[in-house]
Length: 124
Image (cartoon, rainbow, N blue to C red; front, side):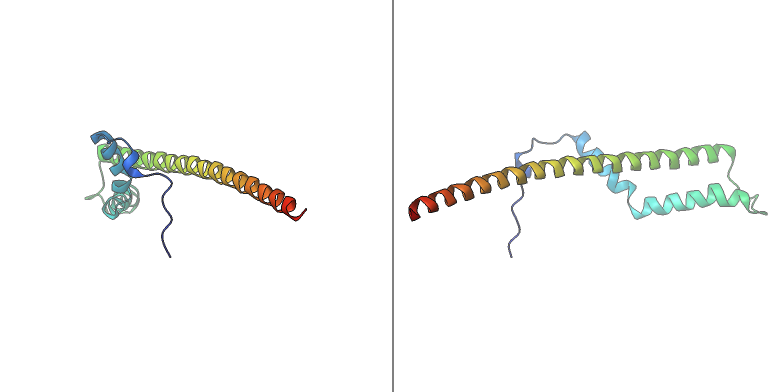
């Protein structure tokens, strides 16, 4: 079985800037296992350690809680924006595919009616 041809050729796109490539790397970095592990450890340190008795030696300072909390808030907000953007891009792509499918369906219906018309004229 052969793979279907893509609807758009990546070679048709203009060259991308460094900023575009850097922004494309952000989702991969946020979803990387090291970043997820870092956020998990940071969350435990900022939330669980201050609640546990006897953890005064490793308890985060107010500044560390502020910085760590901001890091987790900002990274989750960026992740939400990326997810929303990906959903919007998928929606636009699905709409484009639907328009292409409707045009193909209309063309097939037109060819089918022309074939039926030709076949009926030949029988008479």
